[in-house]
Amino acid sequence: MDLSKVKWGIIGCGKIAHKFASDLALIDDAELTAVASRSLQKGIEFAQKHNSTKAYGSYDELFLDKDVEIIYITTPHTSHAELSIKGLEHGKHVLCEKPLALNKKEANKIIETSQRTNRFFMEALWTRFNPSFVEAKKRIDDGEIGQVKYINADFSFISEFSLEDRITNINLGGGAILDIGIYPAFLTYVLLGIPKQILAKSIFHKTAKSDMQTSMIFHYEDAQAILYSSFMSKSDMIARISGTKGQIYLNNTWHNTQSYTLVKNNKEQVFDLPITGIGYSHEILECHNCLRANTIESELWSHQNSLDMISILDTIRKEVSLKYPNE
Ligand SMILES: NC(=O)c1ccc[n+]([C@@H]2O[C@H](COP(=O)([O-])OP(=O)(O)OC[C@H]3O[C@@H](n4cnc5c(N)ncnc54)[C@H](OP(=O)(O)O)[C@@H]3O)[C@@H](O)[C@H]2O)c1
Image 1 (cartoon, rainbow, N blue to C red):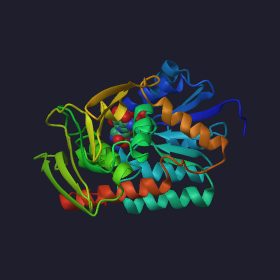
Image 2 (tube, rainbow, N blue to C red):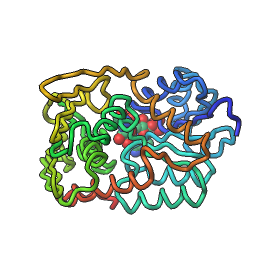
Image 3 (cartoon, protein in one colour):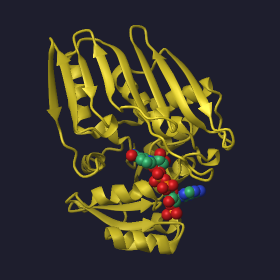
């Protein structure tokens, strides 16, 4: 492998792809080699905006491009597994947007393919690499706030989506759980592990049938978390982690925060840790580290972590009786 630059390809030229590409441009040893859209014109416009060497009018052409080393997949959830597997089978390393798949069954196939082809695969759970999150987690792991007993986190905003929008469209894996509920679920899983029991309730879109708001309780032997995700209401987007000796708050907007607050012994300290760019650069650097270390998974967000995460999401969906048409 040429160690001078890591050669990236992007599949799907939607909203998040633009943000990711602008962060990729900040990384010295990254090159945007090719982008692929279902529309060549859209691909060309994206390539011009983000200085991509090549643009394709189909995803298959990008898979066949010998120059591309790693592919970032940023299409609706329903195509994540198929495209990730295709990429890996074509010898590419893959960074795939969250959730890595619609369900555990699909996710298993991706991980099996990564292992069989010996190609790197990571789910793009960018919060795991956020500098404040990493430092706060270390303090928690080191026991600075004692034993974690309670977590309160959410991800919510008010938005009017059309029925066709991937966020609402049940045929594209739409709904709050998979799109944004994954963040508070991720936080709780990373700090407390797989819950013993999950309780959840959803409010569904009357026409689209996807969940617009879901509240969850994660119950552990000795701890609990109250979590919620919504497209119907707003919250302060602060994650609160409460231990026997203190609290840590991941400040607004917690999943991409630039600071955290430690409350201990009647003292409050704020730690500022700026993100680079929009915040995606940290996961990009992790991919580079893994490729250079010749490993097929990240230690910070491993294959097993992704499988656990999707199992938790499967359980939440089972609790609220949400099944996707193509399952
Ligand atoms: N990490 C984060 O912060 C973050 C934030 C938002 C979203 N996401 C994840 O990123 C993925 C994409 O989200 P997004 O907000 O960027 O979505 P988006 O704006 O709708 O873009 C998705 C792109 O996927 C392609 N696509 C392929 N098949 C499609 C279909 N049947 N219908 C619609 N689009 C299709 C399209 O690209 P072409 O037309 O170019 O082929 C489209 O522009 C989702 O899985 C989401 O969970 C992550």
